[in-house]
Image (cartoon, rainbow, N blue to C red; front, side, top):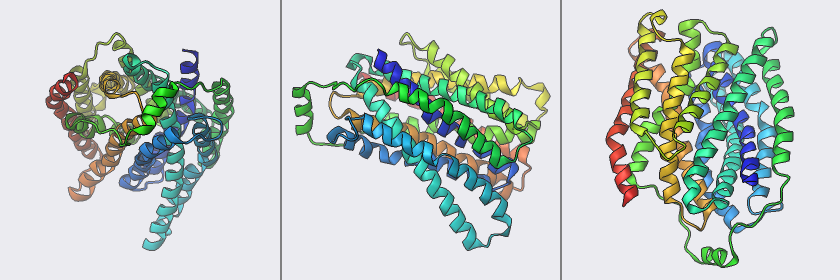
Length: 418
């Protein structure tokens, strides 16, 4: 249990990377630099699309030790990449936004390609960290407890995201008079000084070999293949789970354009969502999973946000409360997904399995992020709608995707029981 807790501390590093790209990155790019929402959402999604590398990362760690251990060496490499590269995409976005109006088409393509390369490198380091964390947690957990281990990983990520979002909001409010570049570098310095010592502490315990020699030899003799999710679960992930994360790109510009929130205020929304997700995961700790309630609740929350786009925001619940409620619903759905994945994990090639299932989770989320930009841009560009109705249409489409999951959940449960 001690090693598990130490491993979960490492989630803080990954949360800083994801939090800064999903929060200030989108707010600055869309609301302040006025870059196309599709472009900014695509860059944020690219950070997650690097999850296609996860199965290969896990397979490599299953077979080859590196830098002092089966998983630890790769984990250290990922952390090194994350903390070296982290400020570059943020500064690159500022440069891109300032130069965007004067760039010719070829210049825009080259500038976007360079920014995409920086985001992709950061994403690759982050995926390496997450893959090794997942693989190690599965290794030190008995088969009957692997669903709980995945749920704890979800919760640790949410706690870390909450700390990062609320802390960043407080810092940005204090630094409101600073230039944007200085604020971004300040966040990197503050979180680095707090996170790096905590991560070093979490890696201080020697890595134990979790498998017996007989099990390891049996695993080495078997053919390799990436874990294949059953079709119903895959459909659920691509449609309904993806729709849960449309809000990561849309919420902060929504708060600025509809309610006039500042950068510091919108950054706190990520923390509110994380608090709600933690509550939802805690409600499912005893094995009670409520995916249907989560799906219906998310659709209702998106419906309220859509009404806020075309109606009077004052008649709606406070946005912070709405976002926290969305988080609770997400936690209920994630707890159910954790149980489904835990039941499907075998005893060998846990690195590859952690990479494969992690890729499914992250790519589904990435699809939701990638979809959010066109959902906002297309009503404005094709139908000439104002920003309010465009936000409303985007959230309604997301609500419809979430409700599709009600028809898929029974098939996933039947396949799991079989």
